[in-house]
Image (cartoon, rainbow, N blue to C red; front, side, top):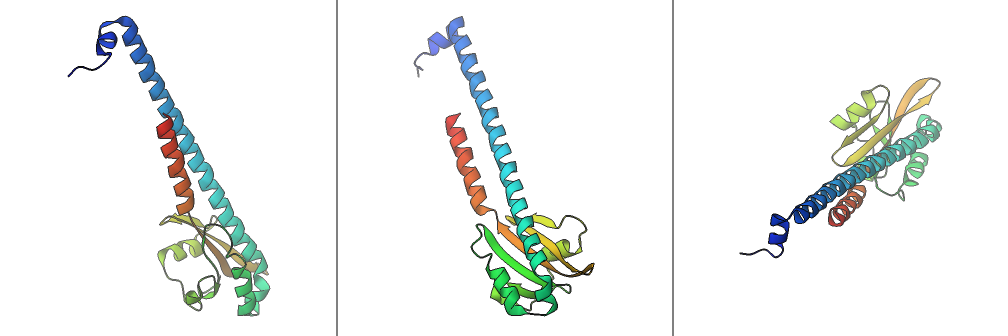
Length: 176
């Protein structure tokens, strides 16, 4: 089988130089696209993490009086206001014993959270954020009179962000 132009590339210096330059440009473009995708991924992860922390903190700041008075309808209204947030999988208010007092998923009401993700969030010191199962899980302490009385928890789904990254990756590969 004869490859068109093979003789020009294989047997002349000019052809070899052109082939090497094209190969180097393709490698360079591939590295550039890989770097761009990596930076975009880090940026989007940082944005989601910040959004999750911010939403959890906002819930925590507004929840103490409702949680102290055990006003479930007030807590529900507060949590339900987040339903329109893009990528929101779940938002909830949990008392200090791990019992769900309000949630965007009504089936969780009065359930005690004992799963690993919940224990990691509620026990850990400092950063209360974990990535698991395609989700960014953020919690903030609900504090009154220097005592923790509960937690506000927000779980954001990363699927749509991952889909955007996949599109960027495929376009980058096609461009390369």
